[in-house]
Every structure is written in structure tokens, then in C-alpha cells.
Amino acid sequence: MTNLDGFQIKVATTEDSGRIISMLKDLAMWMRENEIKQWGYLLEGGDDEEIEQSISSGETYLVLKDTELIGTFTVLEAPSEWDRHVWGEDASLEGLYLHRLALIPSFMSIGLGRSLLNWIQSNRYDKEYIRLDCVSET
Image (cartoon, rainbow, N blue to C red; front, side, top):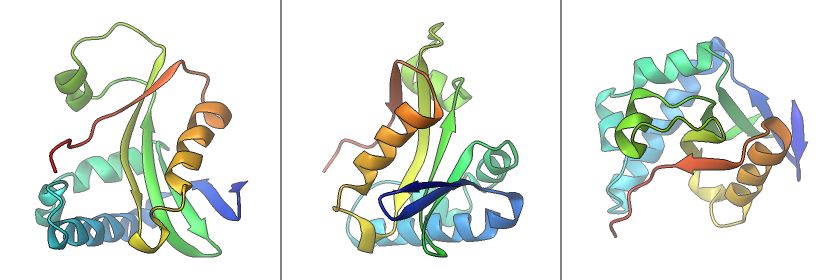
């Protein structure tokens, strides 16, 4: 477990699967209610299996404030099928692939996302860049 400005970052375990999936679905619902067109497929169970697999593989992290789950993210050192679809075939091994970077609304807009990106790049991996796909429409 790593401390980051009063928050803890730790690798998720299979016991965390249910609460991670629940948090992501709650965020997908929050996005829908706030007219953000992203992650709607999570509400129907899309990605549940992939999320569970990334947890089992040690690629998913919890962000905790005390014992409260306030965020999560998944980091892949090699591109997934989706990454190859988005980014194309890239032989470079210099990048990380970041998925499902999520914070509960009460912890948004305080700079924590930026701190997590810095932590990922400088403390956990030695890669040149991070690739994050996201929806760009407003």
C-alpha cells in the first residue's frame, strides 16, 4: 500500500471485485444523470468479466480514504484488444494503457486525478507515456 497526500493506493484483490464493479456502475449512473455520454455499457454488465480479469491479474488498483473506496484505475503494460482498436498496432513498449480511471463525485475536481497520473508514471512504472482513451464530446 502506498500513501499519496492522505489517500492510499493498493492493488485490488478478487475480494474487492464486487465493490469496484458497484462503484463503477454508480459512476456510470451519475454520468448518465449528468448527461455525460460515457460508460453507459457498464450499467448493463458490459465489462464485468474484463474488470474481474484485470483484478485477478493484479492490474487494478483501489484508491482509499481511510477505509472508504473513493477511486479505482487499471493499468496495462501491453495493449488490450480495445487499445489496439483505438490506438492501432503499436510496437512501442514505452507506453502504459490506463483504463477506468474513476473517482467518486465528492473527490472530483480536487487534483486527485492528476496526482494519480503522476503516481502511476513515476512510482509504479518506468514508461515514457500513458495512453488514456476517453470520450471527447460534450
